[in-house]
Image (cartoon, rainbow, N blue to C red; front, side, top):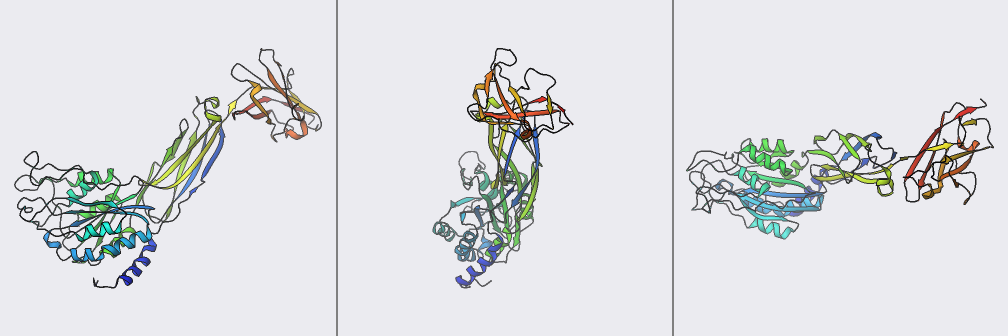
Length: 468
């Protein structure tokens, strides 16, 4: 690519390329679950989650090789920094950019203190400011780096952890990596570390004046994975296979670049299209419900796509409606692509309280003429030491399969008496037989309702239908 290409032409090509990483509103189906469950009951459903094409929030830290062999690449990186910023933010407006660099430890044969070599440096923490980030890129300058491999593992490790490195001799000395130089990754953003290099990686323990102090590949990968950082590797001729291994293990991508990195923008945009994500669902504030998703994680998903979870929602047997606010639990399940939210499900579970009733108080069996439509059926809602029937909202009473309302208008839709002589008041209401939906052959009928503070209850009693 000619680095003198017009800025307008470059941005036009960027806009077209970014169609593949524009965000889309993710959907969860069904978006809301509403159910009435008794203690010990559960429901099972299938959940569909759309995985969008690209992230809604992006944190991108560019890590630049500043060893001597990168002298012809750095001018092109500087020239294209502004276009890279514009192109990415055109597709993902909520993007932040950071900048780090590496050369190598300043000890022969790895590097040189005379030329100011260093293993890692955070040049600019994540910022939404184009001017700040581009200025940081323009301030870069190449150093030396003695042998061919460089300190790329250390750069990845530090950008993820900020742990620092104390090299021999112990205590402050030449070559130490100061702690606190991780990028300030946002908790809900897709995190991407883009490293551009034309060299292989030094491994921990490589020979030198002392064993090479950088991290191993395993330690580097563990740090990246623990922090949900994806690796995009930009490999100029001369780079080895280390970037491929890190990218594959983090859901990232490796793109080849020319010897002078003049195609860095195209390479980064192409890499975005290959990112993959682990999709998970996390219940938020659902206690005391038990909410379980299967599988726990759907790995390596490349958007756009739709993934499927099985979901179980259970009310534990020892959870009582009266112990909950209004007898209900309201919570959410947040679906994540790695650490970034992509959708949410709302759950409303009403815990049903079981209460005793007596159909046709004082008689047994409770005979009901299933062919008679005009008579009324008395139903006693039985009070107890822990259920005060005077708190019942009589406007919510519903009896039988059809949910018949009391036959009498307010305030006479129910009256209080102790129908079972246990010392507690009971609520007796009456229902027109033809409105209840009780059919010939039915053996049970139920009364449902709510208390004034919103507790849902249900009671059932046996019936014997006659007149078949």
